[in-house]
Length: 132
Image (cartoon, rainbow, N blue to C red; front, side, top):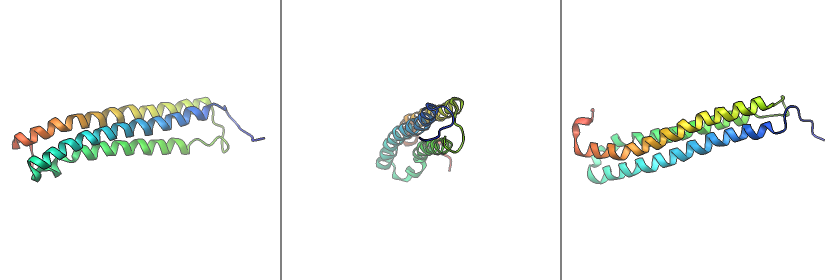
């Protein structure tokens, strides 16, 4: 018989928060990277000298996916019911922190990818938007 202290269903909510942080942040990052990649590819065809200036949204979208991974690792290492009691409060706290990381990461990466393609079109048509 395994000795378990705390609530037996609490780790489910904690791991659900870790999964939400990882899944939604990476989904947004994947979409943002794909949409930004379209803008970079069109920039490479039309004006190859401006490709490095248009790669910033790709990097931003990827970093937001990494933030979700970091939060998921922090949450999952905090779930160890055999070391210390893990109650429903802890599970709900980990769920809410995972969702608090996941939803802004998903939306920000999604929107940075969606704005990268029109931004690349602006860079193709006008040099006055570029600094340096």
